[in-house]
Image (tube, rainbow, N blue to C red; front, top):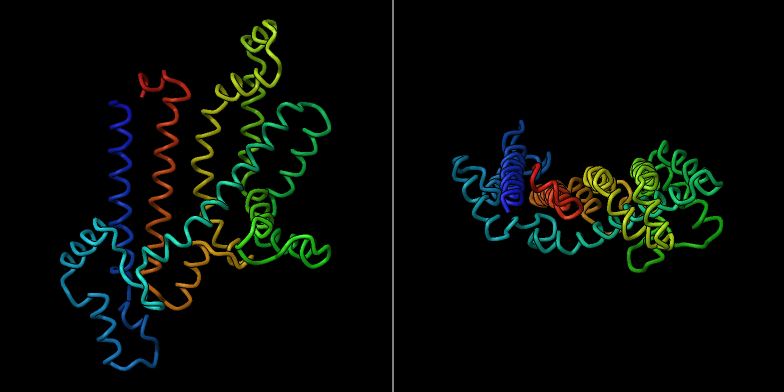
Length: 302
């Protein structure tokens, strides 16, 4: 229990620091946010109205207190562009980004396990070569190639949209192949290390079939270094969705952020950055807590 409380307290401090940093970025950057939102040809009345909406004419400590009070009630403000609550807009977009990130991670884990159990054979070498090739390629470049090949030339898959599973295949392939090469290599090497352990030979001698050895015993012992890298990689995948969602015209917080920057919708920008940061902290908290489930000795050592 002490292990869990220490990790939760640490994550809470990081989240509080993130909230404060996001607030500071908005209000301490040079320039008046109201002028930026209003545009170059705005009248003084328009600027004054936007300044009132932002609340920037009040003392800083009062603005910060209201900001924290709003967050405590789940209020991230109102979008300047659509007049909708920012929370509603984020919750409508977040599932699409989460599905894209999780499926991209799954592609890397499955590829790593298949490469490990095929050690030394053509399939192992082919997966490593393909992952090395795609890891060295920028995501926007790979996305364009996938669209030209599978959508324009072969016409097998749709290039844009987010309403069906078929529209998810190309974005997941683009994000997973580019960003997950390291995870695949970590999964492969970790599984190979455990496969060489003496207890695996004992399990096989007792008559367990290969899939029982792999899924019941080997994968659990190989997971700690994998989940460590997975926590870092998920953060990179979340940031990578900005490019992928824009390129494939998908819904998601990455595209929402790009659109908000284009129209200077500050509450949406602020809310999107905050949600992405908190998601990254919570994912790493889950990674820390998963150590104690995978290996109970971590609770004593932690």
